[in-house]
Every structure is written in structure tokens, then in C-alpha cells.
Image (cartoon, rainbow, N blue to C red; front, side, top):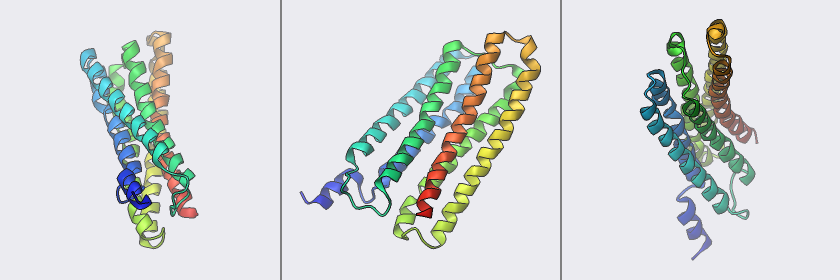
Length: 226
């Protein structure tokens, strides 16, 4: 079989396709955090367990896609962007799914109860964090167009604006994290100290998910700068 056909059988029309499929799966993984925390707020642990299993399923799917990309992207393949940069993007994307799994696993494992007075602000914070993965997904799905235009012209401007918006959402998540930590600080004297310690951990991890998603944008900027 000619080399081009082998390539097509692995990657389809574009080597970017599997990377886009990977970030789509990663985003699906992160999306489950909202119904997961809604179940946690209601202390519906059976439902929370079902959603946690969905998160784990998507994380495993993302892992499988990542391994497939690493195995299938030949070193000799001519690409308009460095092979190592594409592999780095996949690695960064994968860490988002890993963090979503970490969050759900810890909360469910300890059956953590989040104070009711924090619910509204907390779910807003979770949604903002998920919004960063949605924006990363949107930006990565422009890679095809970037390739077609040779990383030049209006498409570059469009992607730069998307990355800028990704940074803005991540900054907003940081501000929300400060607010949520302050709310917990005001309540911590009324809560078991161990619970407080793990709640701070979860707050940090939700912010870290957004931070990891924003790094996808950082790698895109590196591609644009080359």
C-alpha cells in the first residue's frame, strides 16, 4: 500500500483529525463534572457514582486516542508543524481529562459534603472551569483551517482571539477560586478540619482543570509563532 494511503487510513484527510477527536473526548469528560456536582450537592451518591463512571469512561477513551496518536504519528511524516508540538498538545489535553477524573474520584471516594451556602457559587465556578475546555475545543478545531491557510492571514487572527478568550475565561476562573476559598475560610470553624482540607483540595483542582485547558491555548500560540 502506498505511504499516502497508509497515512490516510490512520489519520483520514488530516493529521489533525485525531487530535481534534481527543480534545472532543476530553471536553466530554469535563462536561460531566456539572451533573456530578449537582448529584453531590443533593447527596445522591448512586447518581454521583454513575456520573463518575462516565467521567472514567471518557478519560479511558481519551487515553486510548492519545496512545493511538503517539503510535501512529510517524517520525518521518512530513508535517507543516513540528511533530513534537502536536504530541505536546495531545499530552496537555490529556491532563485535563486526568484532572476531571481526579476530582470526581476524590469527592466520591470521601462522599464529600459541600456546604449548602456554597452551592450556587461553587457550581458557577465549576461551569467556568468547564468553559475553558469548551474554548480549547473550539480553538483546536480551527487547526485544519490553519493548516490549509499555511498559518497565515485572517485565520491566524481568529485563532489568536480564541486563545485570548480562553485566557480571559481562565483568569475569571482564578478570580472565582479566590471567592470560593474565602467562602470556605468563613465556614471552616464550623466544619470538620479534615473535610475542610479536602474541600480546599477540590477547589484547587477545579481551578487546575481550567489552568490545564488554558495551556492548550499556549501551545497553539507557540505554533502560530513559528
